[in-house]
Image 1 (cartoon, one colour):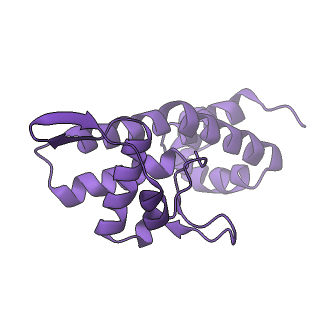
Image 2 (cartoon, rainbow, N blue to C red):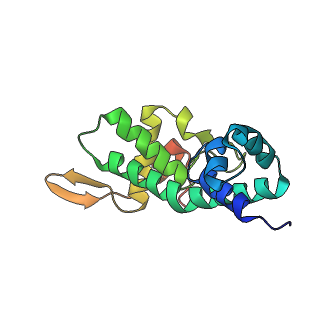
Image 3 (cartoon, rainbow, N blue to C red):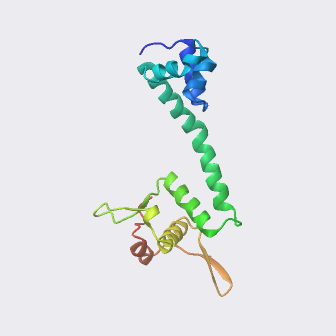
Length: 164
């Protein structure tokens, strides 16, 4: 891979921080400012710059944006003041981020995306997951006792207790 110049690195840094390519060219100190858009165009088509910029943006997404997005999702999910639909969407996003993309029978490999599930399907899935984790409590005659997933729950949700 070709090494990058200081100005190319400054351009990449600027774009990765959210500047437009033209702004990043100006900040990096390339030539006359009236030619900034032409410099930006050329830099964006330079293979070494493209590769470095992709790597830098990927690192920013993984180290900064994803954790921030998950924090926001968690705040919304746990905020009882949020409407039910908003909290449900936050729950869907949290499950998708954790690779709980859907349910399905293992024999044919078919899966249903969370975004395609009805509210009742999502509630059953959430209850089954909570029961499997020992988090679901149901009161019987004033005595709360943990509920575990039964074979009926597995048939209803399409989840196998051996499935993560």
